[in-house]
Length: 495
Image (tube, rainbow, N blue to C red):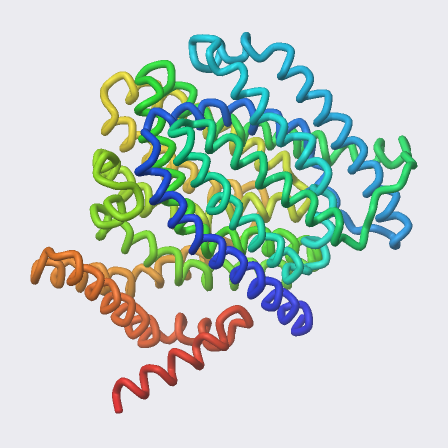
């Protein structure tokens, strides 16, 4: 078990470095684009992405997740299955792109109310066959926890928006800069992964393997469809009721929050799924890894969400600019719930898939939709602020739903999970109280940055004072090095 955890920690380190490096670039790009383009431009792209993300659900059809989750007999068995997955993905994605191109105007009318976005949809959907070329290579690296190699790919592709999208935005001053930049980023990623991968597809195809893969893939496809509906129903409803400008406000607010918190979460969710899949038959180790991940990542994302809520005006001003200040309230409250959703909703979904039970996640999504759609539809008819509050409560409801499913359907103990999360609230509350008091001293931007730094020290000092959190930080393979550095830093400050 020690060897497995060390490998997980190593994978998490490289995955985290990749996300941190990418997220250091992404905010810079977003700050520039938010000042060059309008909320309406971002709203158009969000509307176009409804089609693209839906097609991606069918394009992958669960093959990538199957290649990570399944236990193969040997390399020959893996290679045969990988070939089936690759060619199935490629043929399906090309077919979907042709269908989208043929019905582009009808699709545009359906999602936006007019046929003006047909060309944008065709160009953006070209990412489908591009992504199909590299999807199995990605699953190969994730399966073997080789995230160091994915680190370099992430670094290269994260530079594309800076060197391509921003110049295009300066030239075009419209949404085409975002669409073309995304397509080129996916193209570079596919080329780099395909050229550098050890596994290459061969011209053979086994229908017997396809038949064996289909049960998992069909359930994963059904799950992905429900996830897509959950993620995009808000954009679809808001487009029809409030228009593209408010879609820009709505979607960009959520994207801004997730892009910051995903510095930690995106680096760990994929590693968690790969790690749990490797120990799926050992329930004790399975739950040990899951609970360790949940508590460790929670110690970072929960205070991060609280901090983003407390400094929501500063965050909105820096990240998006003055024309987006209407979003500040939503960005703040969504940061709170999204930080909790990462270690509950997202982590539990990875648990279901790692156990080979994507249908459980699908059931959870379907139940969620039963109250999500009415909430969004009703609140959007009132006003934008009410819509934001309704969306937040829907996320909290989904959180409670997952705990019930894990307890009742999977028969897992949730007491320790609740205690772990609840314990993290203590140093977070101390930090939040300190931030509320110190913000009253001065409202200047410089002082706010100083207060943020002070809040970080207050949080980690409070965290170390709580024994369960201190022990987790000290013993976890994910954070033991960080604990030693923090301890050394505190001793120097005291001296």
